[in-house]
Length: 115
Length: 113
Image 1 (cartoon, rainbow over the protein chains, first blue to last red):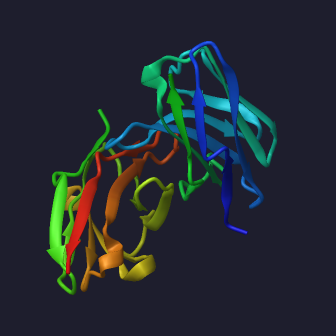
Image 2 (cartoon, each protein chain N blue to C red; image 1 turned 90 degrees about the vertical axis):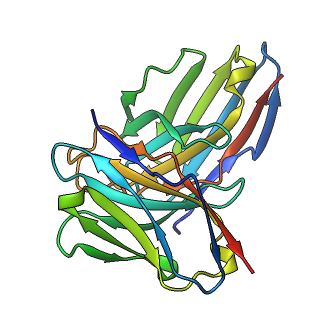
């Protein structure tokens, strides 16, 4: 199984809502990532979890809150978002970020629209 | 500062023609290098990667890339393009300790019938 799944596929939320994005992989990977991708732009790294611990936070606003409940799951909790946060949110996983890796497997993304 | 540059924003080739997408990196040491492809509204798929060793790397879907240290380049090639190759292609770079991961700005490939 070389698949990373993300739910939901699409999400529309108001600026006062609280919602969560979910990502799951069953490849035994110990590093998981959240990326944000605006239209016609490359993905931008937001967070990296390694062995269920947050290892990189790329100065992401606190209205985005990641969580890694176990080695297969990665959540992104959203609260009080702004319209400019509308984007495709991509999850990825790889074997281990401390070794010669970087072969990240990406999910299909969640298309988020903030109204 | 580390960076990765894809000089071509759009490229159009005819089906059956050869393809070369350019990627240049700026980094103190040889980084890890990757090419990803993204179809519209989809996630990214890894085409190939270079860590060390043979500088000509074979990937999936008939793609290959050549690492040239002297030119700080990692160009992607395909001898004969198929219509299904139309997509956005991203070059990416990671330092040896993998504390960062940089994508280039992408090259959108159009394929003419």
